[in-house]
Every structure is written in structure tokens, then in C-alpha cells.
Amino acid sequence: MRFRKSPLFFASVFLLAVSCSRDSNGVGPGTDSGERVPIEEGYLPIIEKCLWSGNKPAAYTVSFDDSRPSHYQLAGPALTERGMKGTFFINTRNIGDNWSGWIELATQGHELASHTYSHPKLTELTEEQQRAELERAIDDIRGHIPGLKSVVSFAYPYGLYNDQIRHLVREYHMAARGGWGLNAATLSDEELTLVHGTGVYPPYDMAVIAAAVDKAVREKAWIMVYFHSVSASGDSTNEIIPLPRYLRHLDDVKGRSDSLWIATMGEVAGYMRLRRDAAVQIHQTGRETLDIALANLQGFYADFVPLTIRLKLPQNWSGLEIVAVCGESRPPIRRESADVIYIDVPVSEKILLTARKSH
Image (tube, rainbow, N blue to C red; front, side, top):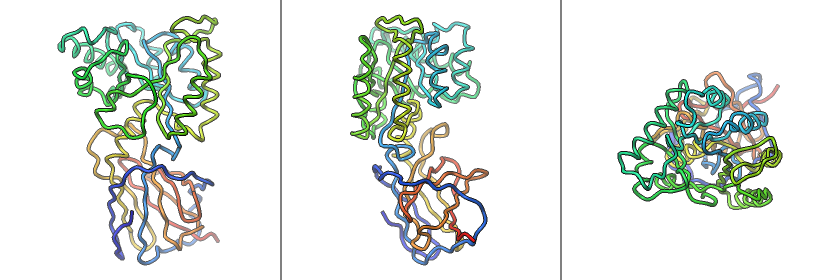
């Protein structure tokens, strides 16, 4: 999509999500040395919003149900060791006053999400009782996790829900897991109240899960794998997977990080909404600088990842060093070709781009 032409232009783009082509080589921000190159007259930027963060082909979330001690003793630490994050759906009544392990998970960047207060069958409760279950869990989680603004994600106990419950859950949470299978890359707010999962149950044939991950990559989809508990002793029951099988699965997923955006449920749901709502705005500031920012934001995005965009550069910047500055940081630039880059645009700050000739 093209912007209108102007010597000092302003552009705001409302774009359909596309699956951008893959990066071929990475280019960092470099240094401030070198001569700045003015933007060619009449430059019309072409921008695409990438389907998934980092322009990965698919999204992957690992999650755990029912607030078991093995979550913070085994499952979470294994994720942290691999630089991965998970979503933990907790029944806060089960935790009582023993929050230290869960607080540590949150500190490590994992998502604490609601599985209600007492894990009831919501379909058998009155609306007043349903609200009490949702609100008590939210209050418990926010009351114990410093700085947590919102409990974004939810999972239906026993997988039971109906239209009334989905509507109610939407008042309290951005996304809720229920049903089985993969998820399309674009979900409406209503569809986010029924995010499908891929459960891991006996006989724990992880090849089946690996095949589902393969399918997600082929279909550019979101796969949400969920477990209940992990055992270091080798026990294997209806809800406990032996630790070695769990670790092999994590290593397999980590080994495919070029193809998978590994993120929490809240991050993936937030990115979907950001991709849908955000307008990408570009200003030409003076003769040598482009600034890029997001506008038209209508919801809660601050705790989520930036939006990955694909940008066609001015022709006379082709092959030059591109320097990006965002506040005090230097966002990485990933190059598809000499004149096409990928960059992550944050929600609340703008990025300044310049091109330099090296001495």
C-alpha cells in the first residue's frame, strides 16, 4: 500500500495483516559514524504488518492447568533455562498462602492466568456465582503479583462453557482457552474467548504433538499446547507427564525458534489485537530522518509485544547501513533485501530511522 506524495509527508496506513516473506540476513543498528543520506524526493513507503511477531511463520504457546507445585518446581524453571515463557492457569483457592513459587514464575516473565477460584463447572452455576469465581481469582492474582495491571488470559474449568459464559468471560479477560485444535492467525474479540488448545494426555506420544506443531507452521497458525503436571519420578498418569518427555518437547520447540514465535497466551492475543487495530504512521522529519509510530489504538496493549512491520526503504538508501533509534534503545533491524527491512514498532514510542554511508 502506498502513501500520498509530499516533500515533507505524513502517512497513516490501515493495513490487512500479511504473512511477510522471510528475513535473509540480519543487520544491527551500527554506530553513529558515517555521513547521513537524505531521503530521495518523492519517496513513497510501502509497509506491511507482519502476521506474527518477528515475522515468524507461526506462533506457539505452552500452558499448564490447575496450579500444581510441579509448575513452579519443574515446568517453569525448564522454560526459563531455555529462554522460553509459558502461561500458567491457576485456581487460586488451591494456592492458599503459598504464593512464593508463583511470584517467582511471574518475575521470570511467565504469565499467570485465571482458571477460576475453585475450579467449578461454570455451566452449573448462576451468573452471580460465575462472576464471584472470576472476580475472586483476579483479585487474588493481582493482589499477589506486584505491578500486574490485568489478568489477560483464562481457561474454562473442565473445558465447559456456553455462549452466556463466553460473553461473561469477555468482560474480565482478553482471551480464554476452550475447544481443541489450531487457531487461525486472525481472531475477533469474540473468537478470542474460545482459543483452541492441544492437550497432552496418555500415552504421551509426543510425535503427535510434534506433528501438530508442523501443521501450525505450514498453516501459519497459532498452536497452544497444554499440560497439567510434570513428574521427575517417571510417574505417568492421566494428568502427569514424565519430565524427560516434557524436556524433549521443549528442546524440539526451542530448536525450531526460526519458525515459531514462542510467546504467552496474553502476548499472542495482544499481538493479534494490535495488528488488527494499529495504523502505522510515518513522518519524514527534515531531509534525512523517517519516524515511525503506531496510532488508532483502542484497547489495552501496553504489556504486549511491539508490532513487526516490513518496510520498503527509499531507493537511494538501498544497501546502506540503516540506524534505528527508539528512546534510549537501538531496535534491531532485520533485512530481507538491500531495500526491504523488518523492524518492531512499540506501542508508546516512535522509531527514528536514518541511513549512513560508512567512511
